[in-house]
Length: 261
Image (cartoon, rainbow, N blue to C red; front, side, top):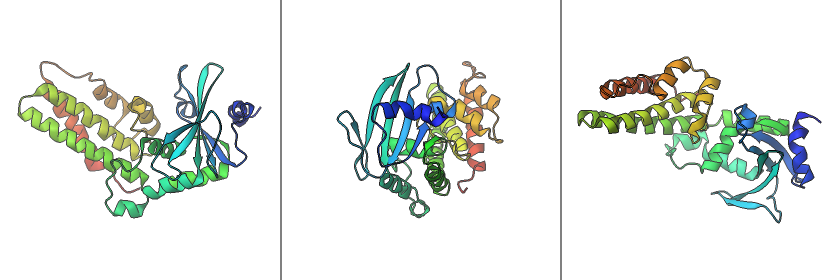
């Protein structure tokens, strides 16, 4: 059995491989080598027409059709989720993150539904199971779109808001709130840095350390990042010092990352 067939075989056994399947990809933590024993198997299937079955679940989305269909089952010791996307839906999602849209100053916040954003992010790093050429073309379409710039713009704007909050809270002597705002700013700034290297999924913060290692940005090494993320140098008797240190890192990232590919 080939590696691809190992993942497709449980779908075939259950009649979950459509006749009009154009491509399929293993996505999520298993595809990235980040899985743990409780991780689900996530497979994205790309089809020409909407999938239908007696057991499928409709997941609403602002697309046409206005939903994607999902099948779930247990196999071995894992839960499997198979989501079926039409080719037209992929075209619609990528149209939302075109350079034309970016140049119109479309606000990144709310531009994509979380499921849309996660799917586009996963097109970068999925493991092809079928339709290798189609998946390679889809990957290139993402790479040449404004998706990276949209994601970075959102993260940098969120970081800037948190930095402003932290500075005001420091000035007002509200050190506890300033610490929380600084932590929020750090997360968004690091997300922007990782997005500049094509590591997305900021909607799922638990993968930030793994994304950081995968990106390995020259601007900030992992040990320094983790020192701040884990608050190793935080002194509860001098919180302003830690907040100031974190905000300096955030501002440095904002000045040095480039929104253009």
